Image 1 (cartoon, rainbow over the protein chains, first blue to last red):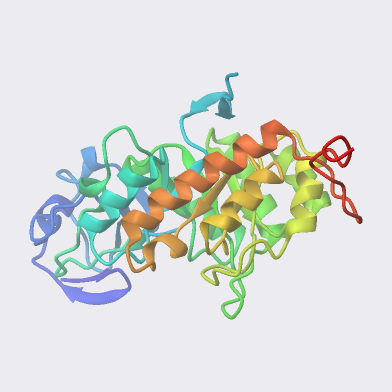
Image 2: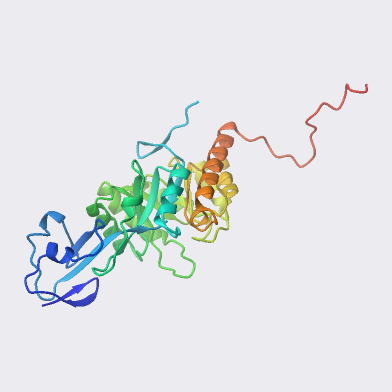
Length: 65
Length: 255
């Protein structure tokens, strides 16, 4: 299954949830996720299975002025 | 005499706001925040790759600090609003520094888009802190849009040039009831002191601290300068004279 993560094409296991995808992160910082441009609350990460062509964006806080 | 600093009805402990960008390490950044005694610090929202070992900025922010996310990267009001909403969903709170920049050379803010974003975000309950070109008509528009403060630039971002917009900032201080927080371009503690002597409510500094040889010591130096400048403003500086005026009596010593 192909997904777009932060604008890049990525292949992932069919039916993987947002939680499952985020679990693969090496870093454990707090993030916010937008699925197809809409904010997805973290309470829904476990229940939300991704579909072919879904666009996921993952953001966190960085240093800035 | 008490000198409380309030933004949107909230007491803020320090008139020195610090940015978190460009520090040599998170440990130095944390020490600089402590040395600055800043209560409000800014951060930016950025995409993280799943394969990157992204640093957790919040883990390095001292407890009791108010995070204010900026909307850097936004080129119009819509993008600024989106960043603000994402920041809130992240749990970074309601303080938002609106920064809309369409000009990548000079990094000057787009006041018209900033005003649009301010109106939308204020209506959504954000504490709206707009970074803008110091223009009085736009300051009034920002106030009417629901801004909690006004954050005029002193000089272009990251230039360390100081208070290039001094005369315009004086006008904002004189005419506007909102706190005026000089943001961007202040390069030395003397610049910060000067802004405070002019009646700015606070200053926001990042590059000048983060790029100093010793950022922690520089953070402390800015904190002292902000306090000194504020005290000077409250004390009311004497007037300037074109000709000499003796500060000692000129008669009565030798008769």
